[in-house]
Image 1 (cartoon, rainbow, N blue to C red):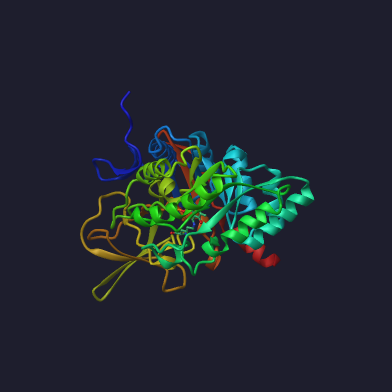
Image 2: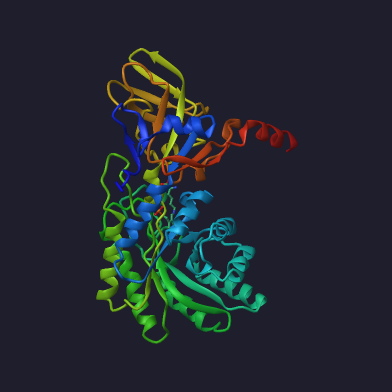
Length: 421
Ligand code: LLP
């Protein structure tokens, strides 16, 4: 059997495709309107398998960060490929469990987990609740006591490491709200040891941010986690260590190391530190799904104003927030022909100047449809109904065919809810 070429590509006629299936035909087959997210489930599965291979024979869990894309079809695909999950709310935990992720492969992070979320996580017997403060440890202990259970917990450490990433997505430095700072670790350990019937410390973790394109800060953070792990593990055994997620992807302007390199690096580090009896957990979101989702939009209006060419599309910042929020640039290309020719400023319909996707080579004449690339992560999950715009549709593609569709709820539902408010 000839292995199929996975992911986004162009066919000989220049049409945007997943493998050899044209995106325009997939949208038509799904019987939905644009804007629509399309995802290549086979490419997502292959991405998880590549990452897993990076661990060699080391015991590991790929805890998929569900916040990147919480669609059932995607979480199920990753669960089938053997992944676990990193969740940050009760609702994400329910999605992970419902999609077939074993509770024993789920970790829960978050700086403000509510009591009912903590109780739900304890009752579900997840792998660990990753505590982000000494104060939170006291609350977890109280919830465990009231349930008559012992909570499996880990510390999410703040290693005090800076990264070269957008300020909004750097989480492991001294000014960040996340994690337990170095100076608070002795107090955190004392809190655990004072509550032996309520808390069981099974792991240590850190996550320094997103869009890492260099291994050095990851290594610095991992070393910090290892140092503490060695001290603890010597007298009270741990089960796992997590170096977090954050593996960057190439949005078309800056290459990133393959995620498997981060994995291999982590495995080597654990061996060097004589911690290889522990399970190595990573928490990738973007790198598993980002490149394998696109947002297809229709050109509503083209306009020429002096020398400026504008293209107004039916997808806006409410559908894909990343450009407005982080000044992120996603490649935008014509749907039915390869990018070429003059640049057009691509903007959405929302009444905000930040609803602007930047300049893109779309050809001499404006195309009818465009594809916004690398939109599989933090696209739909950050979408809103701002300006009375319905959430976009989603189409899940497997074997080059439409496997599932989540149709937009449409704006009528929004109108009804607003009138009822
Ligand atoms: N683990 C924890 C505790 C996290 O907070 C995050 C992401 C991840 C794992 C997954 O990181 P990833 O592998 O996806 O980089 N909305 C932003 C990204 C925010 C990331 C927040 N935390 C964006 O669109 O760039």
